[in-house]
Length: 72
Image (cartoon, rainbow, N blue to C red; front, side, top):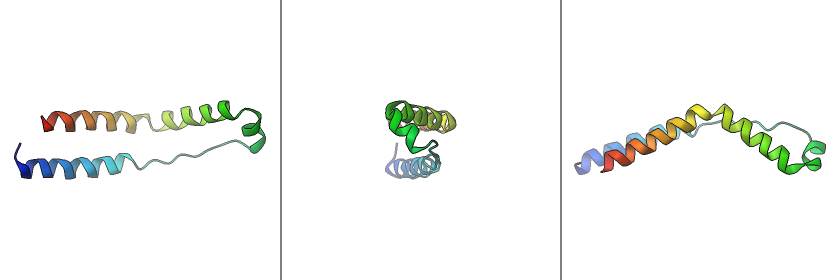
């Protein structure tokens, strides 16, 4: 790959990654629920956030794999 092609590829990758990083995570629950079992509450919130953003996570992984492949 030429130096200019690498530069363009990196810029394109950064722009696409910026788009994929634009996620909204909303935490739910109340203080009693959190204090009762903080680990369970956190796990529930994490699973919900991953589930809501799974498509973007998969896209980001594929983008990273493609970027590394293009560098080789």
